[in-house]
Image (cartoon, rainbow, N blue to C red; front, side):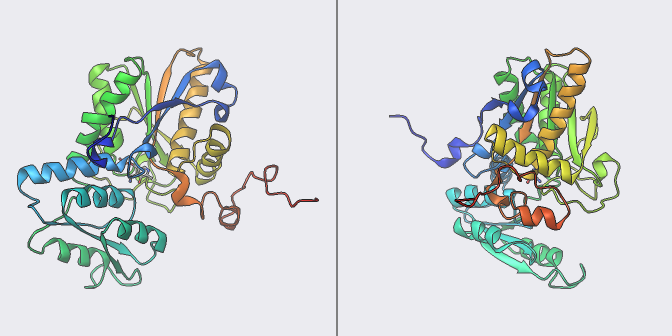
Length: 335
Ligand code: PMP
């Protein structure tokens, strides 16, 4: 019989798949662009990896005791990863999120058995009910532990120990370029460090929304979720990325939709952003005659969580973005 003892044993070892049609001509002439499909993790995103590693490290250090409570201000993928791992290991989870977070996202966390505390957005940070104050107060209760993915060294370490070695093995050490979006910076810092240790010639390229600090911005608003910051987190190692490619929201969203429609990869906007940067890089390398390059781009999560946003024509149009779905739009029978 072939089975896993727990869902936790199924985290990682995600596949690499070649990008084809969405790359246009460069998809057939080379370089080879391979996507690391992280939505195939059991919690649906790359964040399962950091959740496991951060929790195991806290157990080992004694910061998290049996039956303890995990408190983190998150409503996204990290929350799902933590909720899943916590449930399997018998911990309670409390997530603090601002009231602008959609009910769907809160319900996902609750479905895993987590508690969700919603804080008003319309109060100042120093207000006792603010997102920051509530999470600090909950995290200071006896038995509580706050992973803090923005400063926890086990976030980048999980990628150094798992994702990096997987990519190296899966490409037989032939990878020449690694591309990833940057949020906490854990993914790019951990994987990039591992790959450079194997071969210092590997180029590490960050993809970043226009406006974010990583590409020299001031934190100006952008719509792609999960990437870009308005501050420099401790989990981001500034020595790793050789280059940052800035991608506009419009290009990120248009390419996210192309990945679904042309390469059957239903992924989130940060995946579209990273893959767009990878395509740009592939075209540059092709122009230099480097068609033998091997680019790996990491796709963090699934498009299922964004059906009412990136994949919704009205939502895109409300921000003035082209939808690109005119030719493939629903046709009324008889038209
Ligand atoms: N994409 C999505 C959807 C994410 O949730 C995150 C994590 N914030 C990232 C990309 C960026 O990953 P990292 O935090 O490791 O830089």
